[in-house]
Image 1 (cartoon, helix red, strand yellow):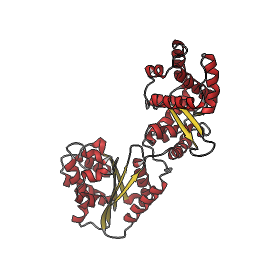
Image 2: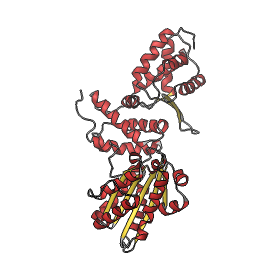
Image 3: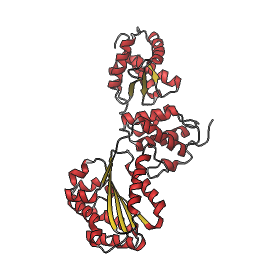
Image 4: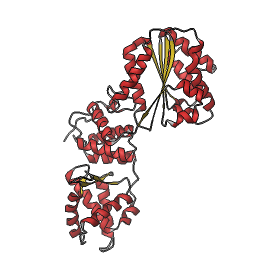
Length: 402
């Protein structure tokens, strides 16, 4: 029995971890780094540069901005101060300014100052230590949800124009602001603030299955003992998150960690698809098994679903083909006294099961519009639990019904 560790570096699966590489985002990482480095590398003068990144939850906005900041720090070292603030946690403008001030110097006051006084202290304290300041304002749109909208707009405008009224020389300030949608810029910022605070925009599309596989493969290499998770499991997890969790990379990494922990708890030496199914259940990403929905499928669809479960369990794969399922299906029909349906009817049943058990069962066609295409069926809940429930129901439904 395996008694070792699968997860050998759990910190690399934390949300706060900033990896050395950003699979699928390396191009935009390089682009942002070069643009800000060029801005910071001016030999004289002063200035402000604002970059805005938008994208859905889990599209990599935060890790991208913090990776770029870390890259810049390796170049400018002590001549660059970096401040990161999550505006959703701060909620109010003065708290955002207070957090920025505290990261520049612990001796700066945290309250009792106006917005202009805060900004003055922030700039003066930075100038004493460095010639460059990078501020990351994460989830900046949350400042505009309540009554802070006008104050927030005023703060951003003042931040972007503050250097114009100083005698500073050789001093440069850049911001990376982050929101879920690009519409935030046009919905909340007036034209003057928009023009002054945001000079460039980047939108990150949600991750697709292929991109998620690259991310998961890299994180697994960092976190897991070598050889403890297969490409099959990574692919299954990536496809599930792309289809059922909007391509959220954070969710994918959380599920990877959970699956590893479950495998360890069971004293198994490899993370299999069933561990991922158990992780999905624990994460509560899909609806709980509804017995009424299962009963509503009727006897024949339940037999087909049971055949799919047996095919998955015996193959130990993340998906099975319709051909593989039909072998078990014919045996189960004989066992339960039912006449096997023809291939076209089975295909229709599979589609109906997918619709009626949305999120739990997925049916896809590989190689569409090509010769040799096949139907792939996957189940996203623990197989043992589903099998027991189906067998229990089949014993109660008389032959010939459904």
